Image (cartoon, rainbow, N blue to C red; front, top):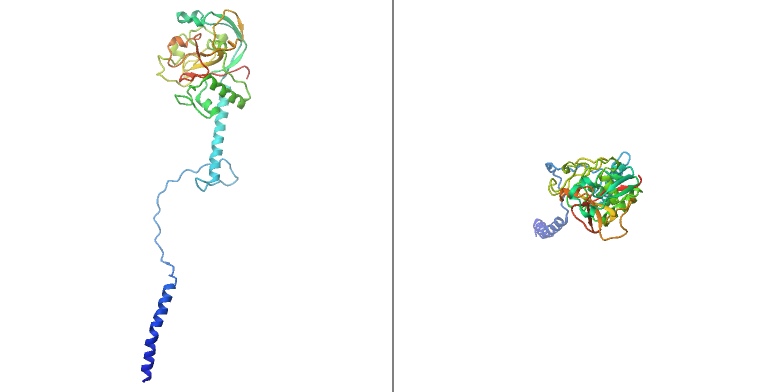
Length: 319
């Protein structure tokens, strides 16, 4: 056979083997990485939240959070909230102390005195002499801001920091007072009925008005004739002779006494009956007629009652 034919025959026989090997190599050979540069993405406008201030400061640095589930973020929020609550409580307690008005002790006639007129009810009689020791009383009804700072909640129907707290029972007021005293180390309490009336009349500076601070109810009180069927911010009407606001109208104010009948005997620092079923209310409220806002008018409710016109005021025997 011609040598050239022999070589050609061998090449034809080897070709399928080479193609198979090349195919195998091609299948298992890794693809080269794409190195062709991509065009830069067009930036999108994003709203960046304001940075949250960390409650714990480190010299020369600020802390960052990694996301909503971050432990440091939760700790920071909790700490900030706690600090805010503490600051609010401190501010409200300072305000309360600064608003306590000194009432020099004295003697007055309690009950339906002549200026109370023909509207006086039988349960405002007989008039009787009462002698009181000196005490302090807040110039304002307890506000929702103070209640929330102490209790961490607000039970009121009409909501605003400067409105008087309402919808609070006598029992609930005691819970508030106990907590307030634990914070302050003082002995805040509800006024006795006699202390309340003496202060409403202006104490030793009394000008013998029908209402607390005036013979004209609209000067000093929010009542059914001008309230618009709701409470109003404390201290927006005229003060009485002692500088006390809203002793007539706005919300009824709980007193510490059990409700009972008057006697004609003179008394010193009376605290009311030893027992009963109702606690004393004084001052009238936003829904009541003018006669119910007189300084000698008396109301009462059971200690568990809560209404949209029931609030209170604080007193201290000593600062």
